[in-house]
Length: 455
View (cartoon, rainbow, N blue to C red):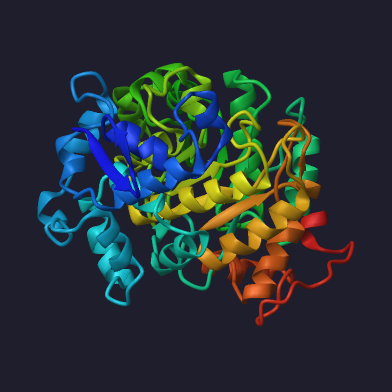
């Protein structure tokens, strides 16, 4: 199906829905690199105007990647809740935008609507929104998940404690771990990116985290972010696996580049489900995403990077995860050139995931060769806090010495909680109070050398 719109004396034509979505995207370097971006600001506005008039039903009739060619497309179409979709089935994309911004779109309504929306629908409506619109709608969404604590409640703001080490040294990781806990970080997950995917190393890291958690009775979950095949390898060996992690993308080819497919993800889900290690709930999958992953794998199928990203959320949604986050600025300036593009992408990712019913966090980050700095991340941190982001990263000094990128620190989490009157996950908050790390009012307390964690 082609699309056209006349502005003044000129008619802009877009050959199909995939082209229209790409041309309507706010400018980003990845789409330019892929040859998909609008040729001018005027064409971009024309595409957005044309996209606003597209009925939502069109997204079910015309797929951006053929059904027969891509298992993610099949997942999206086959799992679509047609009954729920009737709530908005008469809308155009523009009318959906207006409704989302209205008082009629309450948190309860958005929660009900989520299974009736497809990734392409939410990607399309995000392209019509200003940054403040993305914040306003995402803030209304509440997605709560549980394992050993409860993440995503209104008025709460969690962190992933990320104590990475370039050689997986247990003492070095333990030092960062204690540092983070003393700053109140770690309620989303204590998650280590291992320097190697060696099963013995992964097991040693998991056992160390398990010993710390049990010794101090910390109501948190741990994860070593190894490949999912490594997790499948170590579960039968008795490794203390809480969460199953995997990076995912929005096309079948992207996931193949990651070494996964839907069947493998299901196999890992089934294996972990037998463990039943949660105490307050049993959400145990953890997925990371990021705009540009499909293009970097030469697997984007001609689809713009933001729509590819939204399609990855269909994969995540199929497994009812505890955690999802975009590592927004990690892939580099070839895909998101500067702080402005990183900020826009983060707001889009958070909005789209929340609208699809996912417990979305954000790795607010950049690489040192991008045209971005910590001021950009400070701005984005505040926006994410206001938008109701479920969690961010807690990296010692905000500088990840293993992955070599800049993220958010333990201090940043304290700042945003204090600024916006947000608290950690309730079970973790009680532990922090019991440990003398936080008081009943949510204030961080000074720690002396006699603290139990330092013994």
